[in-house]
Image 1 (cartoon, rainbow, N blue to C red):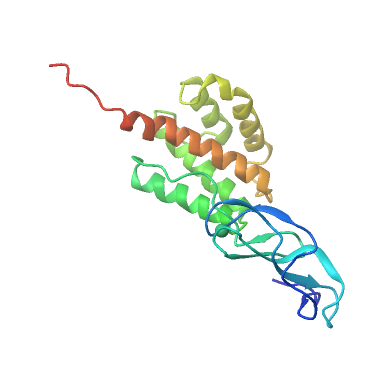
Image 2: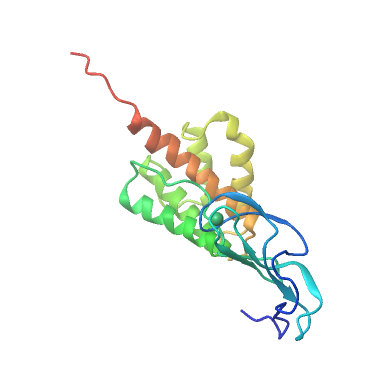
Length: 203
Ligand SMILES: [Zn+2]
Protein backbone atom coordinates (compact mmCIF):
# COMPACT_ATOMS: atom_id res chain seq x y z
CA UNK A 1 0.00 0.00 0.00
CA UNK A 2 1.42 3.39 -0.92
CA UNK A 3 0.41 6.33 1.18
CA UNK A 4 2.77 8.75 -0.51
CA UNK A 5 4.53 9.50 2.76
CA UNK A 6 1.28 10.79 4.22
CA UNK A 7 0.93 8.21 6.91
CA UNK A 8 1.65 9.45 10.41
CA UNK A 9 0.08 8.39 13.66
CA UNK A 10 -1.22 10.83 16.17
CA UNK A 11 0.61 9.54 19.22
CA UNK A 12 1.08 12.96 20.74
CA UNK A 13 -2.44 13.79 21.81
CA UNK A 14 -5.23 11.92 23.47
CA UNK A 15 -5.85 8.97 21.22
CA UNK A 16 -8.62 7.23 23.00
CA UNK A 17 -11.23 9.09 20.98
CA UNK A 18 -11.33 9.57 17.23
CA UNK A 19 -12.34 12.94 15.82
CA UNK A 20 -15.43 11.34 14.31
CA UNK A 21 -17.57 8.32 15.11
CA UNK A 22 -17.71 5.66 12.39
CA UNK A 23 -20.31 3.03 11.63
CA UNK A 24 -19.03 -0.08 9.87
CA UNK A 25 -19.32 -3.85 9.75
CA UNK A 26 -16.46 -5.37 11.72
CA UNK A 27 -14.39 -7.85 9.71
CA UNK A 28 -13.62 -9.95 12.79
CA UNK A 29 -17.00 -10.47 14.45
CA UNK A 30 -19.31 -9.47 11.56
CA UNK A 31 -21.28 -7.09 13.78
CA UNK A 32 -22.42 -3.69 12.51
CA UNK A 33 -20.89 -1.33 15.04
CA UNK A 34 -20.42 2.32 15.76
CA UNK A 35 -17.03 3.21 17.20
CA UNK A 36 -15.36 6.36 18.45
CA UNK A 37 -12.27 4.71 19.90
CA UNK A 38 -8.99 4.03 18.18
CA UNK A 39 -5.78 5.54 16.88
CA UNK A 40 -6.01 8.61 14.68
CA UNK A 41 -4.13 9.25 11.47
CA UNK A 42 -2.40 12.60 11.33
CA UNK A 43 -1.19 14.84 8.51
CA UNK A 44 2.15 15.82 10.02
CA UNK A 45 5.11 13.98 11.45
CA UNK A 46 4.64 15.55 14.86
CA UNK A 47 1.25 13.88 15.04
CA UNK A 48 -0.81 17.02 14.52
CA UNK A 49 -3.44 17.62 11.83
CA UNK A 50 -5.98 14.89 12.31
CA UNK A 51 -7.44 13.31 9.20
CA UNK A 52 -11.08 12.97 10.11
CA UNK A 53 -12.47 9.45 10.01
CA UNK A 54 -9.19 7.79 9.04
CA UNK A 55 -7.09 5.56 11.25
CA UNK A 56 -7.62 2.49 13.40
CA UNK A 57 -11.03 2.06 14.97
CA UNK A 58 -11.59 -0.45 17.73
CA UNK A 59 -14.69 -2.62 17.62
CA UNK A 60 -16.79 -2.09 20.75
CA UNK A 61 -18.05 -5.67 20.41
CA UNK A 62 -14.91 -7.81 19.88
CA UNK A 63 -12.21 -5.11 20.41
CA UNK A 64 -10.66 -5.95 17.01
CA UNK A 65 -8.76 -3.14 15.21
CA UNK A 66 -10.00 -2.00 11.79
CA UNK A 67 -7.94 0.39 9.69
CA UNK A 68 -9.57 2.95 7.36
CA UNK A 69 -6.92 4.21 4.95
CA UNK A 70 -6.64 7.54 3.17
CA UNK A 71 -8.83 6.22 0.34
CA UNK A 72 -11.41 5.19 2.92
CA UNK A 73 -10.88 1.50 2.23
CA UNK A 74 -11.55 -0.76 5.19
CA UNK A 75 -8.91 -3.31 6.32
CA UNK A 76 -9.81 -6.02 7.05
CA UNK A 77 -13.03 -5.88 5.08
CA UNK A 78 -16.02 -7.96 6.07
CA UNK A 79 -17.62 -11.08 4.66
CA UNK A 80 -21.01 -10.66 3.07
CA UNK A 81 -23.49 -13.40 2.37
CA UNK A 82 -23.83 -16.50 4.49
CA UNK A 83 -22.29 -19.92 4.37
CA UNK A 84 -24.61 -22.23 2.41
CA UNK A 85 -25.30 -25.86 3.21
CA UNK A 86 -26.04 -28.73 0.82
CA UNK A 87 -24.19 -27.33 -2.18
CA UNK A 88 -21.72 -29.32 -4.32
CA UNK A 89 -18.12 -28.93 -3.19
CA UNK A 90 -16.89 -27.12 -6.33
CA UNK A 91 -19.80 -24.66 -6.13
CA UNK A 92 -19.08 -24.11 -2.44
CA UNK A 93 -15.38 -23.41 -2.98
CA UNK A 94 -16.08 -20.85 -5.75
CA UNK A 95 -18.73 -19.15 -3.63
CA UNK A 96 -16.47 -19.00 -0.55
CA UNK A 97 -13.63 -17.68 -2.70
CA UNK A 98 -15.93 -14.89 -3.90
CA UNK A 99 -16.89 -14.04 -0.30
CA UNK A 100 -13.25 -13.96 0.76
CA UNK A 101 -12.34 -11.79 -2.24
CA UNK A 102 -14.99 -9.30 -1.14
CA UNK A 103 -13.44 -9.11 2.34
CA UNK A 104 -10.07 -8.07 0.89
CA UNK A 105 -11.67 -5.51 -1.47
CA UNK A 106 -10.97 -7.62 -4.58
CA UNK A 107 -14.27 -6.58 -6.20
CA UNK A 108 -13.44 -7.41 -9.82
CA UNK A 109 -12.49 -10.90 -8.66
CA UNK A 110 -15.85 -11.23 -6.88
CA UNK A 111 -17.77 -10.33 -10.04
CA UNK A 112 -15.76 -12.70 -12.25
CA UNK A 113 -16.08 -15.58 -9.77
CA UNK A 114 -19.83 -15.08 -9.37
CA UNK A 115 -20.35 -14.91 -13.14
CA UNK A 116 -18.43 -18.15 -13.56
CA UNK A 117 -20.50 -19.72 -10.80
CA UNK A 118 -23.84 -18.56 -12.25
CA UNK A 119 -22.88 -19.86 -15.70
CA UNK A 120 -21.93 -23.27 -14.22
CA UNK A 121 -25.22 -23.43 -12.32
CA UNK A 122 -27.23 -22.61 -15.45
CA UNK A 123 -25.38 -25.32 -17.41
CA UNK A 124 -26.00 -27.82 -14.61
CA UNK A 125 -29.74 -27.05 -15.02
CA UNK A 126 -29.60 -27.70 -18.75
CA UNK A 127 -28.51 -24.43 -20.40
CA UNK A 128 -26.37 -24.80 -23.51
CA UNK A 129 -22.62 -24.35 -22.95
CA UNK A 130 -20.61 -21.54 -24.55
CA UNK A 131 -23.29 -18.81 -24.40
CA UNK A 132 -23.00 -15.29 -23.01
CA UNK A 133 -23.27 -14.54 -19.32
CA UNK A 134 -26.40 -12.46 -19.93
CA UNK A 135 -28.11 -15.39 -21.63
CA UNK A 136 -27.43 -17.62 -18.62
CA UNK A 137 -28.94 -15.09 -16.23
CA UNK A 138 -31.98 -14.92 -18.52
CA UNK A 139 -32.13 -18.73 -18.56
CA UNK A 140 -32.15 -18.92 -14.74
CA UNK A 141 -35.00 -16.42 -14.66
CA UNK A 142 -37.03 -17.96 -17.52
CA UNK A 143 -36.74 -21.45 -16.06
CA UNK A 144 -37.92 -20.32 -12.64
CA UNK A 145 -34.66 -20.65 -10.71
CA UNK A 146 -35.00 -16.98 -9.77
CA UNK A 147 -38.27 -15.70 -8.34
CA UNK A 148 -40.43 -13.28 -10.37
CA UNK A 149 -40.10 -10.62 -7.68
CA UNK A 150 -36.37 -10.40 -8.44
CA UNK A 151 -36.93 -9.33 -12.06
CA UNK A 152 -35.38 -5.85 -11.62
CA UNK A 153 -32.33 -7.37 -10.00
CA UNK A 154 -31.98 -9.88 -12.84
CA UNK A 155 -32.26 -7.13 -15.47
CA UNK A 156 -29.54 -5.10 -13.78
CA UNK A 157 -27.11 -8.03 -13.45
CA UNK A 158 -27.77 -9.09 -17.03
CA UNK A 159 -27.14 -5.57 -18.36
CA UNK A 160 -23.95 -5.31 -16.32
CA UNK A 161 -22.80 -8.59 -17.82
CA UNK A 162 -23.62 -7.41 -21.33
CA UNK A 163 -21.66 -4.17 -21.09
CA UNK A 164 -18.23 -5.78 -21.36
CA UNK A 165 -17.96 -9.49 -21.80
CA UNK A 166 -14.61 -9.50 -23.52
CA UNK A 167 -12.90 -6.71 -21.65
CA UNK A 168 -12.13 -6.81 -17.97
CA UNK A 169 -13.43 -3.68 -16.32
CA UNK A 170 -12.64 -2.69 -12.76
CA UNK A 171 -15.70 -3.36 -10.64
CA UNK A 172 -16.98 -1.38 -7.70
CA UNK A 173 -17.95 -2.58 -4.25
CA UNK A 174 -21.66 -2.05 -5.02
CA UNK A 175 -21.52 -4.21 -8.15
CA UNK A 176 -19.61 -6.92 -6.28
CA UNK A 177 -22.09 -6.87 -3.42
CA UNK A 178 -25.07 -7.08 -5.75
CA UNK A 179 -23.87 -10.10 -7.69
CA UNK A 180 -22.64 -11.87 -4.56
CA UNK A 181 -26.03 -11.48 -2.86
CA UNK A 182 -27.76 -12.60 -6.07
CA UNK A 183 -25.58 -15.71 -6.16
CA UNK A 184 -26.31 -16.37 -2.49
CA UNK A 185 -30.05 -16.16 -3.17
CA UNK A 186 -29.84 -18.62 -6.08
CA UNK A 187 -27.78 -21.09 -4.05
CA UNK A 188 -30.07 -20.86 -1.03
CA UNK A 189 -33.32 -21.22 -2.92
CA UNK A 190 -32.15 -23.97 -5.27
CA UNK A 191 -29.83 -26.06 -3.09
CA UNK A 192 -30.12 -25.30 0.61
CA UNK A 193 -33.88 -24.86 1.09
CA UNK A 194 -35.02 -27.87 -0.99
CA UNK A 195 -32.49 -30.10 0.81
CA UNK A 196 -33.63 -28.87 4.24
CA UNK A 197 -37.27 -29.91 3.79
CA UNK A 198 -37.78 -33.43 5.12
CA UNK A 199 -39.61 -35.58 2.53
CA UNK A 200 -42.29 -37.76 4.12
CA UNK A 201 -42.33 -41.39 3.11
CA UNK A 202 -45.70 -41.91 1.40
CA UNK A 203 -45.85 -45.63 2.17
ZN1 LIG B 1 -15.84 -6.87 16.04
